[in-house]
Length: 472
Image 1: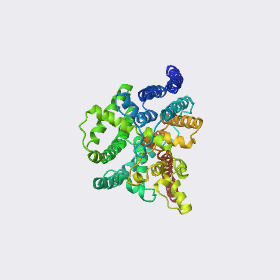
Image 2 (image 1 turned 45 degrees about the vertical axis):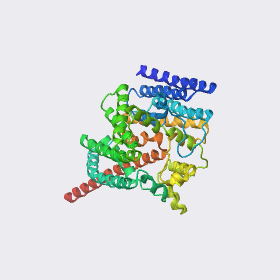
Image 3 (image 1 turned 120 degrees about the horizontal axis):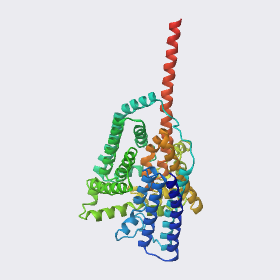
Image 4 (image 1 turned 180 degrees about the vertical axis):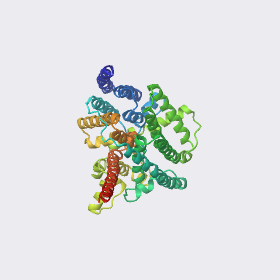
């Protein structure tokens, strides 16, 4: 343990020093995109190893978050390093603009700053001495009742998920991939993500408290959910499923770094293979490129989140509602109820507002750029470096504390599993998919606990009354 602590401390100094040195070279000399790509790749791998050491060589939430971060934010850098002949700082299709060397460097500095300070916060979070106790522990009878409830809810959840997905699937089959988003971006705002909120919470309960049969059922349901999504053309759900399965498997099995990278490569191949049968791939046309070329193109295209982050900095005066929506569930609905104002997607979402401002025509046709945690932190920091550093630090500490508490407390393990899907997609998603879900998860937990305790109280009162009648 002492050796690991010493190594994590050393790596905690090496990562920012190495980052500072490489960024300084890029500031002193005008270097090409290949060098800037190597800067990211080197710092990224050092950072991954740091996370691995800090977490005592275990797969955890922060590691799978950074595995997806490497693809969604750094994919274009990896592709360029491996020989893909494109510009990693190519502007998005929403807006064409010139990206100067100074701007390229600034984009890279923000990315590296997030990596360095989030991992610094993660390291600090693991060094915080927390009380090691199984807090909020459930009685065995409560776990048994919870398993009964999860068994009862399973067919209902299957019906809800299949009903939602098949409606979308038929729409995509008839009108193309963009049909998934046209209605969302043209119609008034409605909180219609009930199934998207319910499933990760119930999945978290099943993985944490379910028996092997329940876990298998819910993992299989997750797989079918991801498979139908990728057949429609949404690749991220299937990739997230594979990473979360790797994490769940590692809870009971030891996995080395070599096996992790092998799994990641295998996952990309599997993803490309399944995606080739999707409706979206059929719209794009069949490609006769080699597997290596397809993998490089896949990495480069997925890395487009890098320039989505830069695009988010081009827009000013974002609406106030998404700031609250990032942390408080139902904030938009409450605002609409109190003011009577009809809200639309671009009023309630940072990404929607950015897309609407950059290119309204593409936005209303169903196109979108997505978002990134980098953009969230940039907006919440007001574009101030020191606040951006601090928020990145807090994010890393938050994940570390959650992981540490989850080792000894099933309640925090349940929270971790519930938000794992949102966390894996956070590099290209928003905090509004993370913190409100965390609040919902706590709320559902409280409801279950209240119902179980109320049921015990009712049985206790009935038993007491029955005993009194016998005595009288």
